[in-house]
Image 1 (cartoon, rainbow, N blue to C red):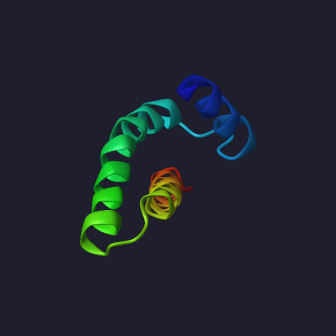
Image 2: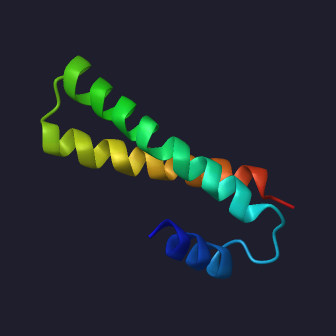
Amino acid sequence: MVILTAGVIKIFVFQERKNFFRLFFILSLINPFMSSASLFFLFEIFGIDLLVAKIIGDVFTSLLLFCVLKFFLRN
C-alpha cells in the first residue's frame, strides 16, 4: 500500500523531484508513531471520543507529513 501511494503521489504531485522515495519512506515510518501520539493526546488528555480522536489525529498527521514532504521537496 505504501509503494502504491508513493507512486501515485510521485506521479501526480511531486513530478521530477530527487530523493522523493527516500523521504517518503522515512515519513511513512514516522507516520504511525505520530498518529498514536496524536490519538493519545486527543483521547486521554483532551477527552475527545475515541473514534473522533482517531479521525482527527490521522487527518492532522497526514496533513503535517504532506506539508513536511512538500517543504523538503520544494524547488
